[in-house]
Amino acid sequence: MLERHREGVPPAERPTDADRDRLVALLRTQCADGLLTLDEFSDRVSLVLKARSTKELDAIATELGVPGPAVPDRSPKCTMVLGIMCGGVRRGRWRPGDKVKAVAFWGGVHLDFRAAEWSGPVVNVKAVAIMGGIDIVVPEGVRVEVEGTPIMGGVDRRVNDVPILPGTPVIKVKAVAFWGGVVVRSRPSRRKEARDASSDLGLEQMADAVAADPPALEEQTAPDGTVTVLFSDIEDFTVLTEKLGDLKAQELLRAHNELVRAQIAACGGREVKSQGDSFMVAFAGARRGVRCAIGIQRAIAEWSEKHPDQAIRVRIGLHTGEVIREENDLFGRSVILAARIADEADGDTVLVSSLLKELVESSGEFDFGPPRTVELKGLQGVHVLHPVLWH
Image (cartoon, rainbow, N blue to C red; front, side):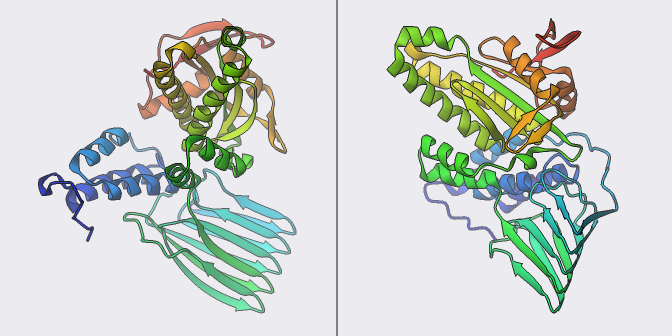
């Protein structure tokens, strides 16, 4: 039973358990339909449980919106991950199905369920480590059951003792370790870590903390190998520098960078690189990228309203496609296309490719303006771009 007493909130305005359960059920439906990952589900449930008044709960419900149409269940009945004299990895956004089999033989397997899309109440994991190792990462707040048979090996459960969130699936792990090891451990989502940091640190310190431990670049790759790439820069920053002078322009640039990095952290993106007033960011999902772009524009607009003598306008372009990843950088035609789209954007504008628009428009979360047909420098043919209406 949730604690009902909330200091300063009249009894008539306190949410009931039924109010919370209704929103949790909505979130559970969205998660089961593949619209939310386990990380996103747990983050939103935490907001519901922390709401102190019915007004706060109504605001959360409005932000969450209504569940979209159910998507076809593309989950395999059984996912096999092998590490035979090599490494097998499943992380980022993936659909494990009802059963997962992991086998490590003179090799290693890494399974990260934090961003997985679950399709049922139970995920059964069978882990067999023979002279190898299997590392299983689960999100905090999910019920985990571990059964182990170590034979000259080890089975280790390192799940943090935190309250189980209602509606989460049960992850059942049956492990066999023969001269090998199986470790099951829990970790909070990166978005939760960023929010916790922001509650204790200033905006600049929070951005520094996220930059020090950003999401791994490979985690921003979707199961089919695609990445959503965002480019942004300040319109006419050279002119602003001439107007303000070097010192004030540098202060303005720091403020801009803090705002952008805060939105990147909130949306689970990965800052690939930045130079001057420009950013290149990678996302595992197209909707996360568009949310980040909208968040940046709104944060910049709010800041500019408070500082009219130093108002700035940012242009943003996004595209989703396959990329070439080398160490901590991304290359390829999709990256070039995203950069060229950003070049076509005006200040206060978010432009996306037709492919990205098709990926996100079925959710009903975003609105788009009239399309533009343009030629992009260095790329053949004409391209149709769509402005995102973020105001």
